[in-house]
Image (cartoon, rainbow, N blue to C red):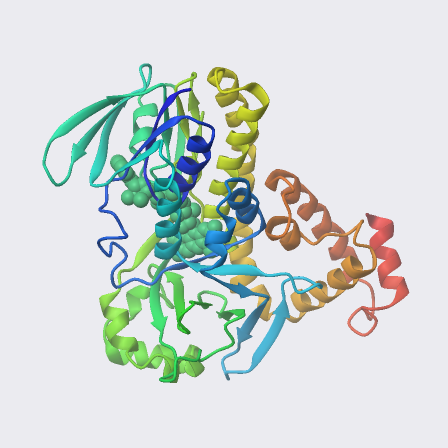
Length: 444
Ligand SMILES: Cc1cc2nc3c(=O)[nH]c(=O)nc-3n(C[C@H](O)[C@H](O)[C@H](O)COP(=O)(O)OP(=O)(O)OC[C@H]3O[C@@H](n4cnc5c(N)ncnc54)[C@H](O)[C@@H]3O)c2cc1C
């Protein structure tokens, strides 16, 4: 059995620790922040995320599904809010399958607790990785409390230290490809409190979207009856964070674009000017591994934009694939395992990055577009009547384990087919006719 160092005890590092320890390895997790179960490292920010099918597949494989199920809210549909406050509900799938909203902080705490239950896991908080000797799997850490520096030698180092990854920084000193691109949109969170009696102000089983083309807001339920709202807007320009300088600008902007949200956000201005504005970037890199010694897992390997809600889910899938490859090749041949891991995951990391950008356009512009709604209806009918032939792209990504790269290719094929179907004369009136169905199936 091996000594494994996991750098980063966030969402992916904590699950990875469970997987590796259950294989019998000795696991040490080094996390630069304090223990979130003792100090509120998420203080003032109630960020939540969506767990979807692949996330659940990995959580189940690690034996922690039940613990996570206790802290999630099911979400069955998108609910769009137009400028007049009119609501339209669009289910995610014909059979009302759900994705699940969860607080990032709560999920991290649950997984750290699950990891710590295992006798061969040791968690070291307040330890920041400052360097890695890749050939000897030796990491240097700075103890943020005591001020000491230590070196820890292991057999394998797994870098789960997120987008700014120190492990990846070290790999970049060698023959390594790296790109980072910021999108023009930043984001800011605003919390919707529950009603005074603790009930939610909106339907908690929907992901609420205010799509406004150049910008949008979305809201996801928390278990306490509140919602986390996230405002996505360009950094600068006509409709942007840059134009909102004071409370008057803010209220004018909300009156014009998110009027129905105002009564639900009594401390909007206070929150808006207090909460940070964060940027969004896509990181692609290769290779993800170094010999039989080091691998990147999660955002350290593939940071993506959050519009498909798959960043963490794809990181969890990384963990499961690594575990499957260890099952296949054994726990002694890490050279073969890590090589296979990089080859299997890198194309999927690229595909989910592309898919996420695509879904940004869908959420921002298309959910309010009648053509898009028509397409969803036609696809829903096709899926209902021919589930073996037609699985819409969204379902492939969110409700299946189909590799992202295959989903991406199939999605492009669906686009071409639906373009022809939507060009049929009078399709708006006869979208549910045999003829429309036949045309789509012929083109498949
Ligand atoms: C607004 C927003 C919404 C999102 N929504 C979703 C969603 O709905 N669904 C979804 O699946 N994904 C979502 N994501 C993406 C998701 O947050 C990330 O993919 C996920 O957090 C990646 O987990 P990770 O453990 O790889 O990285 P992180 O969560 O960034 O964790 C990395 C950990 O490593 C630690 N660390 C960093 N550097 C060091 C160091 N040098 N030494 C030691 N420790 C270190 C950090 O403190 C942190 O705890 C969203 C992201 C954003 C920004």
